[in-house]
Structure formats: C-alpha cells, structure tokens
Image (cartoon, rainbow, N blue to C red; front, side):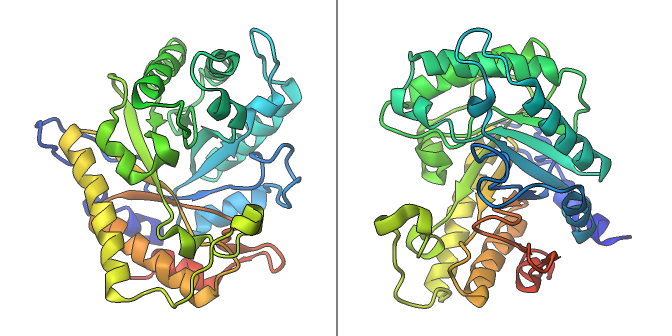
Length: 332
C-alpha cells in the first residue's frame, strides 16, 4: 500500500448516513491543494505564479489526490451574449486540466473573483453573464471525465446576496450545467464568503450530484496578520496561537459543519484553509495541523490554500515543498 492509498483508506471513503437516512457518497477529492494566484489573477503570472506540469506531478507524488483550480473566467469572457471565453484562454485552462488529470489528480474547476457581480447583485447584467459563461464552460467540457468537478461561484458575499437570491442564482447555474453535464459533480457554497456559520440559513438547490464546500480562516486576525493585500486593514495578532481554547474552537467549528452536512445529506469539503506567509513557519504549521486533524476526525475532505501563492506549502525558489507544511498535512 502506497502513501496515497493509506491516506484514502476505507475509513476515509466510507459513506455517511445523515439524519434523513439518505446515504451520501463522500466528497471525491479527499486531500487537495488550491492552485492559487495563477489563473485567478487577471492574467496568469501577474501575481507571481504560473502553473507548471512539474508542479502537478509533484503534488500527486506528495500524496494529494486533487487540485482546485481557481480561474478568473470573467476577465476572459465577452461582455455581450453569448459571453464566450477567449479561445486562447480555454487552451491554457485545457492544458492545465489535462496535465493534472494525466498526473492522476482530480480537478475542481472554480470561478473566482467575479467581484463586480458581488457588488452589483442579483438581477444585474453580470448575473446573466455568469450564467452565460457557465453555459459555455459546460458545453466546452461536456465530454471531460468525471474527475473534473465544477464549482460555479467562489465565496458569494455582500448584502445584496441574500440566501434567496443566492439559491435562485445557483439553481439557474445548476440548470445550465446539467443541460450538457447531467452527472458531473457540482460544488456549491453558502454566502458570507462560504463561511461555516452561513450554512445554517442556506440550502443548495435540489438535485443529484451536488456537494457543498465551506472555507475556514479562523481566527481571521491570526491567519491574515500582516497580509499586504489588505493594506492598512491587515489585522495584527499579539500572541502565540495554539492553546487548548484555540484548538477546541477549530474542532467545534468543523464539527458543526459536518453535523450540518450529515443532517441535510450532502457531501462536504473544506475547500480553503491556510495561514499567510508572513506568519512564522512553526505557527503556520501548528494551525494547519490542527485544522487537518479536525478534518480527519470528522472524515471531512480538505483542500489547502495554497500551493505557491500568499499561503504557500511549496517554496518556489527552492522548487520543493516546505517540510513543516507537508508534515502538518500528512504526518500522523
């Protein structure tokens, strides 16, 4: 048995039985990594990272079974119907997906950073454009293998996106995807940046092969301390993290998420979690290990943010994984 098989053993893959009695298959990508700061930038490379085939092979060899691929589709799509994505951009995304699948990885294809949609809200031309973009993506990847998952909208947020408005949009997105991909897994999340607490008042639209993903960066003041993209709003954290109360809060939060998933009958993923690079390696690793161990205890799939961006587990200069981070993710 190799390392990956040990990680993805029978206990990790066992189906769960929610309170309603419906048997739910677990989220198929169990141990993933986000390829952040690449195709989610306005143009790949703008934020200092480009995806390489060697990176995908290294990810597979390290024991991960999939990647989440955040893509800023709206920066490469037309502004009028049918909102077609530029062919050259499709070719680049196709290349990365093919390389990942070829390395034996699942791919969670995500639409990231549609900020103007969050600002303008439901009923805006951008809501219509989002649906049109996904109509095209669904057609483009209609013959892709089932190891390609769709995540139509990352971190919905803002006062305009009430639960009713978000569910209505997600229902429409599911409809256009299902027209070309009747069985592909679709990953959806609640509002408020996909926060765990937002699960309580939200439900995915009805349908088969729908899974749920939430994100976790608590306490935000710890995980985002010194984050340069927040400018003067970057938080500070004036103590070492890791006491029993800190650890208990993580266990409690993730237990509440899995309780919701089991009650309502959805496969669940922790789709993002991480600590930015300005925090000491020891503190980053300690928090990451605590979250990962809580996920494992709850049989919860996880996907670390990120490979080589602002929350790295890989050192681009040395072209090697950061040992403290891989130990936090995989060592028992």
